[in-house]
Image 1 (tube, rainbow, N blue to C red):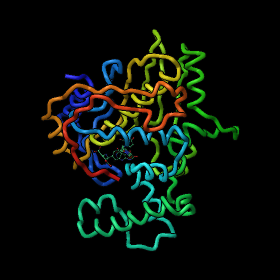
Image 2: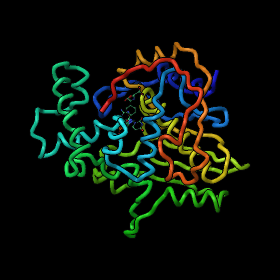
Image 3: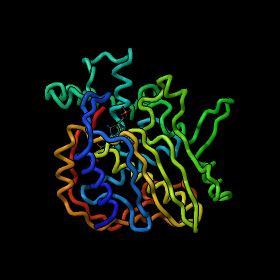
Image 4: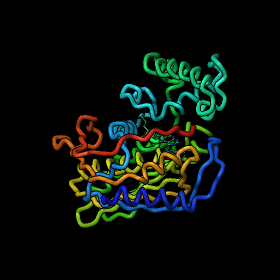
Length: 320
Ligand SMILES: Nc1nc(=O)c2c([nH]1)NC[C@@H]1CN(c3ccc(C(=O)N[C@@H](CCC(=O)O)C(=O)O)cc3)CN21
Ligand SMILES: O=c1ccn([C@H]2C[C@H](O)[C@@H](COP(=O)(O)O)O2)c(=O)[nH]1
């Protein structure tokens, strides 16, 4: 059995066995544990789970969006990526400019009320069209605030200067690989405390480590939706580690995950049981366009997943 599916499924089983029911912000309710670590040897294959189909293109376009320093949904929508739509939509429907039907608590109501869901879908369609086509609307309501892209590429220091953490960390990896400070931080206290992000960062800090010509990465998550979010998060940081290793002329080492509040939403239990019943397959590999050097020059077509033969997708509602 490949080790990525193995450790992921063990984690899910542990949460099913030992998770404690905990109410949460979204109103869905979770089974939760505090503190869990996973390790993936990236040389053994690319950790895209095989026990359900995980959409690599969505993961890659989200990562490219972060790396561009972009925080506006327009880029994601233009790439047919809808994983962040609800958090932009929320900004619009809670604003003074929104004049449509009441969307209070839409995230929970769409899972409970079919008629409401229809009205929601119309409003969401309108929102998506506006973000794609109306510059003024997109600027205000397509922007998620000071989320990952802003913090990774345009961190505002207490001295008023703006810092590019990704450029800095790549430069350090190249010139000072033994450093124990190879770190990128997205938990900007001012933005979190002042409510300047549609969602405070879940993967809030990551760190690199170089030894024997190999680049390893450890990422921290304060809160993790283990069924929908974690498969994306693992693949995203694996891809980031590959991209940076590629630019720095290093091989890939380990990807280490540290989760704090790791949870299964109460409406994901049947789905995870289905996934646990499946037999893992061989992991795919990642091929990067060798003609590209800089992580900032990669496009979607420069990253290819080879030999991916997963079990079918398992649908689940996302908690908003
Ligand atoms: N509750 C929650 N879970 C998350 O994982 C999450 C958030 N919120 N908020 C922000 C981002 C958005 N992320 C998401 C959101 C949705 C999917 C999701 O629905 N994935 C589906 C495929 C979706 C599609 O094809 O459009 C899946 O089957 O993996 C995954 C990650 C990760 N984050
Ligand atoms: O990359 C991500 C982003 C978000 N999540 C999940 C973790 C939680 O279930 C929610 C965020 O809610 P909070 O109340 O802010 O913790 O989104 C994820 O798993 N991965």
